[in-house]
Length: 193
Image (tube, rainbow, N blue to C red; front, top):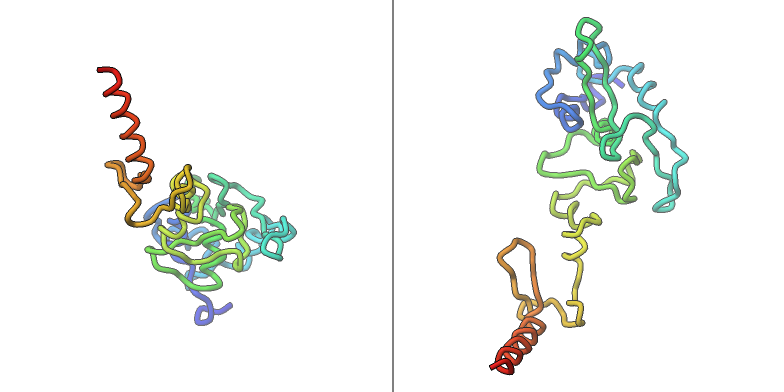
């Protein structure tokens, strides 16, 4: 790749990994990034040596699994160290580094979602650029699972006229069930008198 044909690897893609505010001059000192901000051939060889392209078959294509260091399941690539400063390592999320090298930088308001649900996967066609809200709703977190529910446990639909929002954010109850529960409590109180 030449400086004109490839998107530069910037300090922003590094800061998405494990470190913030890295100066590109300190990254260039490592010899891993050239004067145009592109990763050198040597860095890409080291990068690809940590990728297994024969991962589990998901979405009709195999995942490209990161075999190197991981943080919370997501692969991190150590861009390099300056020999004069042993603790000067710059880390980047491997899937972000690869995606940005192919597609260019993306807006900070967006996130890359793993369609295969495998955080160690780097395969670009298993990644989709989405809003943080969309990414959260696609996850398997309790918030996302509850947001996908269309009916209450008793089978009543969660529609605009049948939702009672609690004080806690994103906490909802079925109005029909809430009224029935209140009627039962009133009946219990009146029978105690």
